[in-house]
Image 1 (spheres, rainbow, N blue to C red):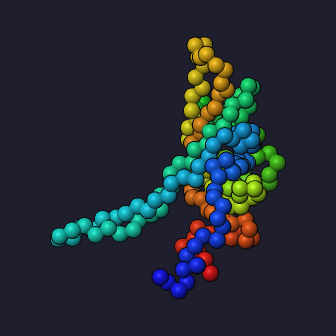
Image 2 (cartoon, one colour):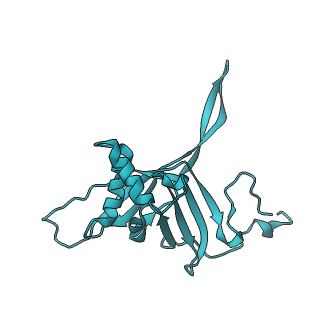
Length: 194
């Protein structure tokens, strides 16, 4: 047994709760307010196989991030659903280019900062402790929606249940920040515990 066995133990014996989160999305705050579920997406390392005379030698490639998906309750007036719907339409420019510029102006009319005038957004998934205090931030950079689930109306259902919709987002990358230590990024390769 190592002489420093106690350093290998977890410092906090409280466990992470699946209900301890808050989602923040600047360009669609009504979606974030009624967010029911969110997840930290999978991260994987791609590999490049180098052929040799006998075997292929795998080398590390680029980091690949899975899509971010969240599920939210849909309000009766479709306000939160329409925030995403209009964002998607503006990205795809389905009828004319004016639709995209109208969306940019409607969303970003308060900001003079050119970076804020684009139609991408940063988002934050706040991870809470068991006492529901803010612990970590998962910050998603340059996020935009790529799909929204259907809303299936059905008169044959026996119980009233309210609509939820799932939206999938693409983004450039995410960072995990420890809010207890001045927002220090902790998912970097140079992070050490000491």
